[in-house]
Length: 109
Image (tube, rainbow, N blue to C red):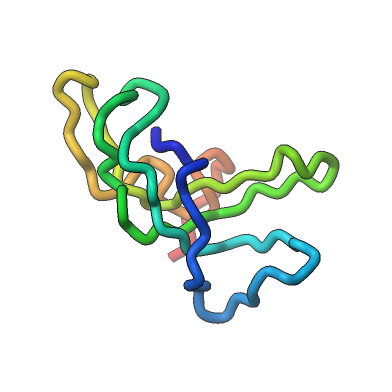
């Protein structure tokens, strides 16, 4: 629901993870600050971004065959639920687990 293009990598890196190397090797987890003030697509297009200004866990989806398809998904970002004209802010999202829900695997404890 949120525009992940507006998430910028912050200098904070989760404990135990190494930094990005000089040859731009993609790592699995980052922490970023959400700088998108508005939702710019989807059902909630035009609404204020409830995750704006928040630190957000980013999970990398790396594509070794086509690096132009590399992207990140926020885990636990604040989002909306309900109809756009009566949306309710929720302090998480439906993908608030690792491994991600699409895998069908149980979440890590």
